[in-house]
Length: 49
Image 1 (cartoon, helix red, strand yellow):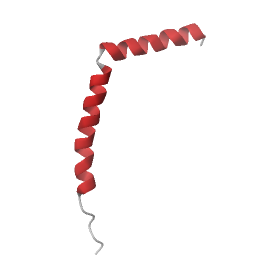
Image 2: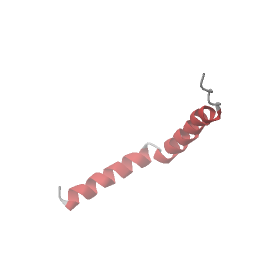
Image 3: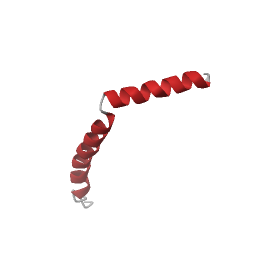
Image 4: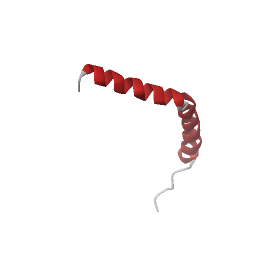
């Protein structure tokens, strides 16, 4: 790939990221992931029989 086509590709990726509210989506996914993972970490380990 030529440098010009790589730059064009990166520009298109960045534009799509911004058009689709990429930062807002990333923030909400991070928030949701924390709510899913924290309860799993707080469950006590079962003692072996």
